Image 1 (cartoon, one colour):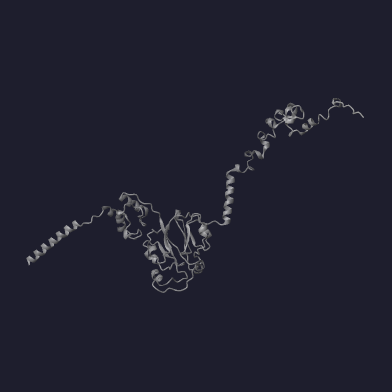
Image 2 (cartoon, helix red, strand yellow):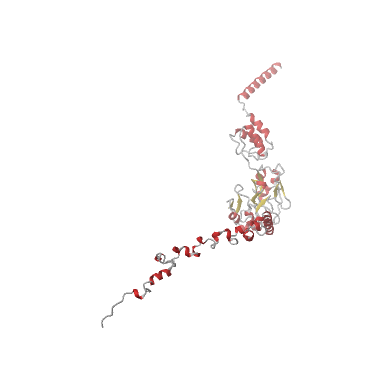
Length: 390
C-alpha cells in the first residue's frame, strides 16, 4: 500500500515538473499594454468595432502599427484618446455616426395585402415571402433590430409599423444593421447640429410599380440629382442615393422630390411665401431705420443736390461770383467768342488778310469774299480795250 502511494506521488511530481517545464518553454508572452487597453474599453462586447468583443479589439489595437481605421463606436473619441495614450500613438479622427431607417412606408401609404401569422421574427418572415404589403423592400416591423440593440436605441412605432432610432441612445454599434434582413438600416454621419438628409426608401422597382406599392416610394425620376450642385446624388436601379460625404445640406433636393421620399432631420421648418415676404419687409424697414443716410428724403443735409439753395458754394449756377470760369461775362479771356475784337486771329471774318484760305471749312463766307474781290474791282482799274476797226 505504501509502495503504491509512493509511486503515485513520484509520478505526480514528475508530471508536474514536466508540465511546468513545458509551460515555461512554450509560454506565449502577452503584451502588458493589452490589459490596459482592455480596461479602458467599455466592455460591452457589442462587436460594432468589427472584432469579436472588446478583447479582440484590444488585441487588434496592440498589434496594429497605427490606430487609423480602428474605432470603438460605443466609447467614441474619448475612449480612443485613452487607448492612443496607452499605445503612445495618435488617435485617428472618427466621424460620429448614427443609424437611420430607410423606409417611409407607413400604414397609411403602404396598405397591407395579407396578414402574417407566424414566428415574430423579421429573418423568418423574410425567408418565407416578401412581406404583408405590396412593397417587398420595406420594413417588416417584427423587431429583430430591437432585440439586437443592447442600448434600447431602437423600437417599433405601433402607429406607423416602422422601426425608429432614438438618436441620443444610439452608439453606432451596427448591431441593428446586421440584424435587419431587408438591409434598410444604415449608418450615416450625424452631421452638424445632428442634421442630415437621406432617401428614406429602398424600393428598386420602376416608378409606376413602386408608387403603386407605396405612395412615399422613390420613383427614380432624377429631379433631385439634377437639382444637386455638388454631385452628391446618384440614381442606381431606379433608386436615388445621397452620399453624406458630398452632401452640403442645402435641402434643394428635398424641395423638388415629388413623393417626399427624401427626409431632412433636425432642420428648422421651411418658411412659407408669406413668411418670407414679411421677413423681407421687416429687414428693409430695420435697415432704413438704422441707416438714415440711405434715405435722402429724411436727411436733406446729407444730400445737397436735393436742396441746392442751402449750399450755394456747391451750386455755381446760383453763385457765379465764386466761379469766374463759369461766368464768361466776368472772364472774357476764357471766352473769346464773346469778345472777338481781342482775338482777331480766331475771327477771320473781321481780318481777312490773315490768310483766310487756311480756314475755309470754318469760315466759308470769308473765302467767298476773297474769291469775288477781283470781280468787284472799280472800273478804272480795268485796262481799256481798243475798238476793233469796222
